[in-house]
Length: 460
Image (tube, rainbow, N blue to C red; front, top):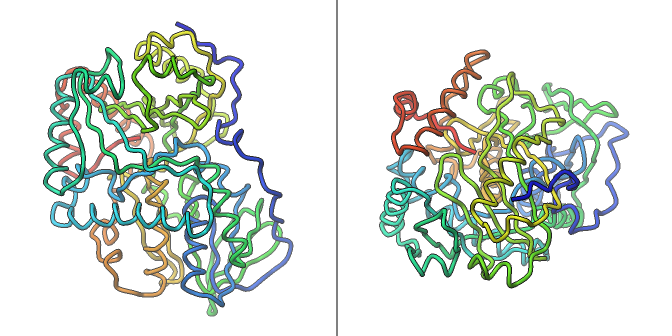
């Protein structure tokens, strides 16, 4: 086994696949606009683009504290789910009465996302190549069979796999059963950010980068956004900062920053990939609470990520925490255990990212400042596709429109807030220990069952 990642680049692999466009200017003056968007990741860019579709003549301004998409949007695995509810099981558990609607809207959102990418000429390496979910224990296999039953109930195409059929998709002694669903997408997240940003600029949206918003207040005419280099006077505003510390104080207990880590191998040969049965371009995820996710890149590397979901006391978001050698070592060890024939491959990239985690594992949305500001956050690792749906939801809310999106219970009700410190860290620690124990034994702890009763979850 090798843990040869010491010399790996600390920049996300995706950034090496695309030459960045010239930076947009920072704001250097005061300005007035119809709609201001704070945050230039997936949520903000989709919001700007969809706002332009609705309001052809509006002045739309987007500002980001760094370069667009530099944080969570460029540090993920690029899994593009046909879901807005963190999966079918979560929809059934939390909103059984509207699960069918959530599932239908999630699948529709992925279809429309694919259509948008084509219409705007966004080359995000999008492919609807499917996802294989695998089980390592008997109780995880039981979970796959329950997933299959739920999928059948809603007419979702899938296939349960074991034995040779599973080995044809992924050959690892660690995993004994699998479920393959063809309707699942993958993207290159950096190319998605770049494509959406370019589409916004072509649509006449003004983008100011390296322009942090330091404060928001309102006056009689609208909202006032303070930045170090100018003031923005906006009729309406969208807050799309996601994993960053929310500018609205009342939202700060609604999410916690969870750190997730990734490794990417050197390019692998066809023979190496065939040796583990992975000849297709589908993504892979395992069924543990502490789960791994993996995928291939366009140049035949393997991204191997997940498992550790690290919370730092006080919701610390220090950028230094994006590099964690202990997590990289665990990932490398588990990779070698899963794929012994690849135990000596080199890892060329290592990085971490922050997940904006809500207590119900789905995003939430709402209004503030008398309906002039809309927000969406708490995507809990499912934001690559769900951010598009959230953008449409925020625009509906700002317009005061009653739509199928705004009527969802998932939208109308806020998640349970996280407790203050030190109780927050204690509760998260207890939950993580319980989840690890459930992975090892198949038994759910009393503390986790208590959280279940209150609709509180913990996931990466």
